[in-house]
Image (cartoon, rainbow, N blue to C red; front, side, top):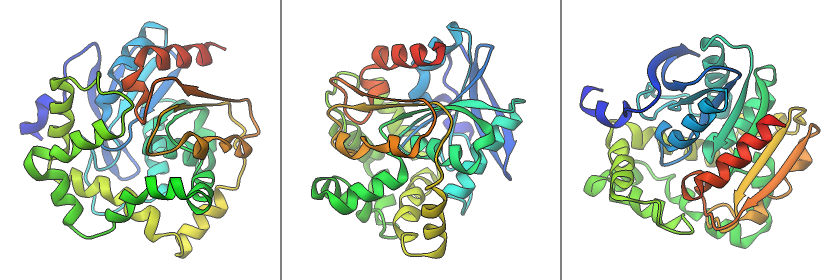
Length: 301
């Protein structure tokens, strides 16, 4: 990873290290001391997407840790293991490797989906859950089936089912496609300064990241009528008893707010839902102050 160190090992008021969990090694970035808050990024990002929240959480008295998910950044790029059962085991294993019995999970996009699934499959590890831009998996399945607008917005996932062609597109021309996704999925582009764009494009250029990141999408579609997918859908009927905060960009063009709303039917613990004004699919990047304030308020309460 030496040639990618300046991307993955970005300097800041935090510490980089590797931890072993669930049969793999994961790159984590941590700051502060106190109750553990584990930050889970989405696609097409990596841990750096949480840079502002890392500092704010540390200053507020929390131990904030952002991890690179399996297949991303400085974490292992394994040939398999991109199903929610394995990935939830990754999250729970990282919590234990950090020396904690539980953590509050904060997830965006695919990281949010892992938050939902970990709260069910590894419930004893989860003290609370904050989800951005990610409906509960069963709510998302229902929305795609019932809403033509959501089906159209999710159509890119079908293109990702082809072998190798999507990988080539993600890495061509210095990963220009990553910039296109970031701009298209945002409500406004003010946050996409040249350094931010360059960092996300270079992170996708790391060997095997494009392929691994697409394996998340492939499992989600290909498992729909397989026994493992049906078993996952049944397991996700289990209600979540932990406190949950769900935030969603009011102008998200990828996961429509109407698709995310209603996820609270799977939560029996304290539940809060809020849309973030002026934000698209990346509210923690597009409106970082609003998201950080909501997160800190919820944690303190």
